[in-house]
Image 1: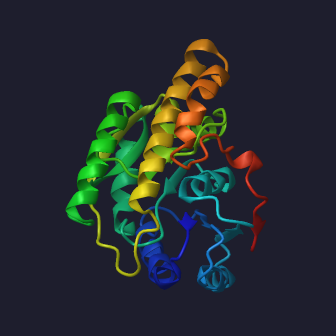
Image 2: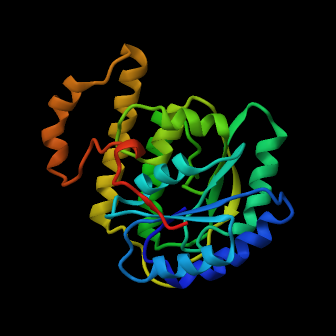
Length: 260
């Protein structure tokens, strides 16, 4: 679970997670990835980890962004089923049992997304997000209502971590795993405190990186090699948007320090 400027939501999130997980299993781990948050999140996570030996905290040396932090968390996750969600309480932990039940009901399903419902953002943001997700659906075959809140099988995690280096965006990476994905409707909540770290400019950069990642991975699948020529052709115009388009995955991210 990536954490950045979530100090106010971490304690209620943790309490709600325990209630959501209790009917499912008593064998679980919760992995928080502190993405170099400057506003006290690490201190809250340390207190939680001291109380619960099933909680691990990975403290990154510098900020790498939400999706790179997710990949780092996946690299540290164990278990047959792995869940990903945000720490801002827009994703309701109470939906986890339904997501897991849907996954277990069909052995051919690899990932179950929480299909986003409700007016949890401004109309403009919801509209641009829908347009972007529609493009991802066309090119990457992920559900139109998918977000980062999902559950997946161990095999999917292993496939994702074995992918070549591309711009790390969770939906792009999962689309490249070539497994069946479905979504179930989940009402997303309005952010209880704070504001999104994504400006409109940053959202545009992320969208371009995600779509470019799909192109790269399709070339890798078809040609069996990394598309360096495409990078040379497209790198300059894309970099004008101010984004790094080939950050590595978790294996060469800043060395995380496990708080516990």
